[in-house]
Length: 308
Image (cartoon, rainbow, N blue to C red):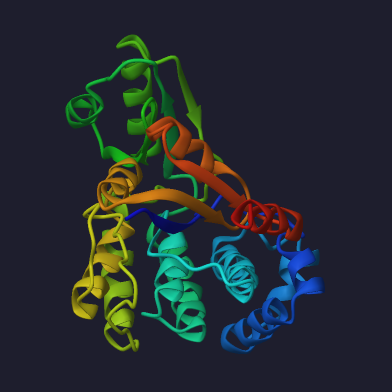
């Protein structure tokens, strides 16, 4: 039997005004924003719709992006669209867990507020960095990182031909140079505030795990796929452990998508700002159907296709 998967983007997809049309159109979406603002202790909608000076600060980005994606999810669900399994890239995992009924919106918002602070505080500004490696052929990316002086590891396995490396800035630059010499087409430094998904964030992961231990987390109502293992996780304590590990471990997105496809998923609906995951999906497996819901017009188009 064919299945539908909801997938949620991570940090970097945010922009001022995201989910505004859903806020204006759907009562269910407005309710998500109001609940999130109460949980966060600040006006999420103000930053989301008018906060150009704050929306890219990690401590604000994470709860605001989570809220925007969950507000769109609420509208999607209000139209009767359901998923058989779910996953999210990095921060998007918290949206996925909310979609799966494992984590309440309020708890998700409170956790990611702290998650953003822990990640920002883990490494001094300017010390770490991340670079996307673009290639047409497989590269020995893990071995090159291991041979490079300093801390640098693979942070993201996004799709064929695109991985991200992360760690100490100088080590990342050295590894990027070696990868270009090995045949990479491009090495693109990312505009991020820290070396996410690298061992440098181990302390942040430990703090996050301690916070998660006190959060109410239930067994997912639909299968949830972890970034860390690229497989399903259902035990609440295991999920807590994986979420703590995730901030300092590689995001195995390509492998997660391949796992969901093996589990029968043939339709992926990206819920949230941007088309990053949709683009990855087309490079991972062209045979699957990919839809993207960022505006009410996107949702109408999806509904029309469902009714054909």
